[in-house]
Length: 78
Figure 1 (tube, rainbow, N blue to C red):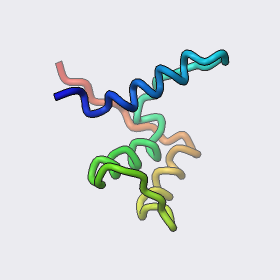
Figure 2: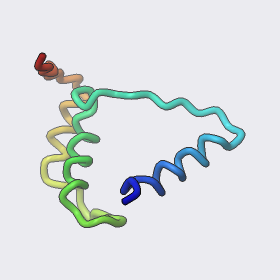
Figure 3: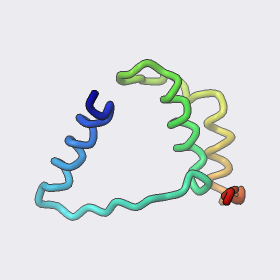
């Protein structure tokens, strides 16, 4: 079975090959709680486009943490 994200990865590569300047930067989830929260939510939803009439319940809390620069240390186990 091919990778479930193959079409998405292919589309991203095609966009990257266009004649424009792009930068891809990895940001740890601890530095972007709101995006991490939305990614976790997406994992529990069926595949497809989801448009929210209102933001998910806990998103406001995570946005405040991102705005104020709240930091939670990352646990790395040996």
